[in-house]
Image (cartoon, rainbow over all chains, first blue to last red; front, side, top):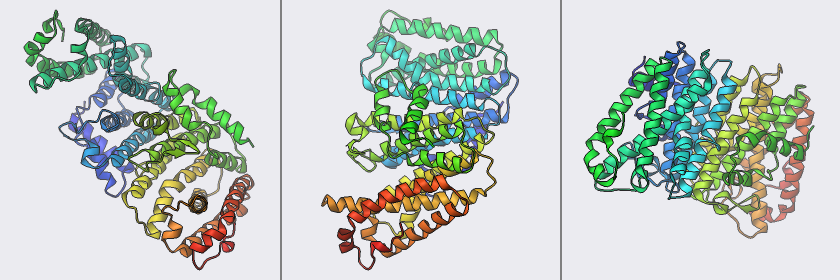
Length: 292
Length: 292
């Protein structure tokens, strides 16, 4: 299995062909490097390994998903969207450069994410390209962004719909895409449901860790765990964690388990640190019930 | 050969699969329908016909390019970009809806344009996908948008660079993409140069017709034909028109010739109507020297 540094190096190598020879290159690289936790590339990699068929094709898909994820962050941060001045501890793209460069950098990375698929030599390329566009497009991730921005008050159902579209679809694409580039006989629906469960848990845990950070920074923003019946959200989170555990065990997806355990361990540390403070605000439920 | 209405119907049919079942669908369709002059789809179609191998694949490419072109217009019109309130005689997307919906509609159409390629069943799919991303991405069309917005004063060289990247690349893609989906033995470089010449002429004629309209509306904006040595631009225009004529003749590209003649006839009408007014402003060169 490749380390984060190796995955980052592969990404750098893969995108070279798509970058211009002028200042705009720096705008693109500013958001891409250093990468985030490379969660999606790691999942592509781990599942292919678990299915016994890790190939060069998987690394192109992994790079593509990281580039795609980065474009969504740049556009999410724009003034007309979430209007965030910071991302990953540094100025967001439109604050560092300007708004038109951030819009065009997002467009360029979205474009490159599809261009990277051109290096995939596999009979499933057509199927993968269709799934990619469906999961990330106007019926998938982008629709999630629209729904998220359309209303500031959400029900539990609408939170789950937004998390499904905006977060889970890209994680499902990592797993289903990785699967499509193997000859695995497992039902694709199993892989899809695993991706959905990981995506939902990932986003709910992210909401929880943000809550922790906000409490530590004494600046509590809107967070579904405060505004809604948080007991229901914990129940949903635990149900999804169960699905993940059962699927990983049943199909012996050991490398994928490692990626998930690494992530859950990190999240549980963050959340437990803020647990007491959070308990004061979330009534009727103890964090210790959360089976991380 | 299919009519504009038939090409529009095919486009409507092709994009159905990618559209969501809610209001966001209307945002996407607002900019797509009615389509513009469908110049790029018509070129795909005509060249494939001329090369004797018009297939279903070509119609997917044609639809893809129209969808892609539409995304560039939506993003070009944004306040942080050209800040245009109108497009094709109606409100631009961000004025009709709002800014975040226009950004996301552009993203969605960019995404769909790649998704449409998934229906292409041809050994050149990888090559086409690579070329598509290269010509429309950070080294191509998008770089043209960056350069266009970076400076308000341009030299003749920089105008030509911007026209090459921002306009010609997508027209080259229409022709080279169409060519790649046939077994033609013509050198791809010939097709590429034809696309470049069409792209440059197309944009210079568009600048001229805009100049005509601006004069009629008594609101003269920045236009390269006024600000620069217009004689040089006319010389360049004529040189490119020669290349187009010679290539179309030499390779018997008769349907492609029809598309170009149709376009040139329309443009010459617009330009001749405003000729006298323009002559007053552009010294030392007569429009009648323009060999349309």
